[in-house]
Image 1 (tube, rainbow over the protein chains, first blue to last red):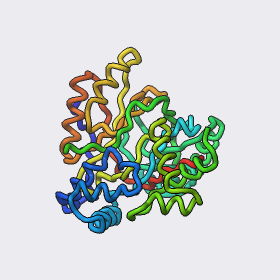
Image 2: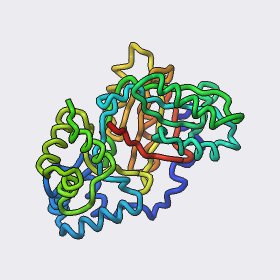
Image 3: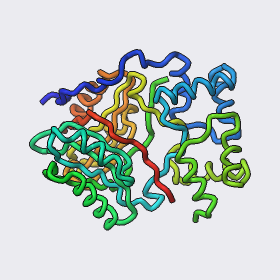
Length: 176
Length: 148
């Protein structure tokens, strides 16, 4: 069995022209473990990059416009906020309708991430993934049944994989 | 315990800070507190583990890199050993234990696309277990926000 069993192109929608300039890459490396919590964090970054603050702010804004940076934000530990039921709901839906249904499920307010992914038959029949976060099991079950309702006749089976432990959560790490 | 300002701040900081010279002062103005309070509380939430990080959230796909979700079925007696093997790779960005036969789920993020295959091959060889690669074919939505 080959390690790479999927036939899908990992970067089908990403032309290589999206690669980073040297200063953009340096910015990623400098901030991938976080920004310092000081009054002027971007001035700190400007000093590290050896450019002006104004230039640094422009680079960040451009990276945001390109989608390289989604946002500059705090990432909570969901367990510590009381979200004990972090469920990856997975669904086996008719292929021809999967794209349409994925878009519909993504509109449900409690779905935080939604993706189409390859099946691995026979062990893994699920092609649609939707992450939900709840403080109570009953809430999670309610969310699941709402998703089931949206899927209607295209629904074949589903499961939910609740996380029990964060084993690692460092985010991206490019080598310096 | 979190007070009202902690909660407001936690909600506000999840949505993204402004890109300007004094971002914490802007947030302090919005929440009617001081810049020093924002800074002290944010640092405290990071130190206590309430927040796992503070900084830019990147989408590696947008700069020619690769990103994939993979799953493994790890025998319970080997779970800690396999966790250590998988987590030693800097390209493993997030790793979660889940209550299922597929009990380990992690994200591999690499700067070059072909590195993904290389990491998967290395993990399979070091653990003797199969790695199920599940790269996204479509992304319908990403927007985690956990209000408190």
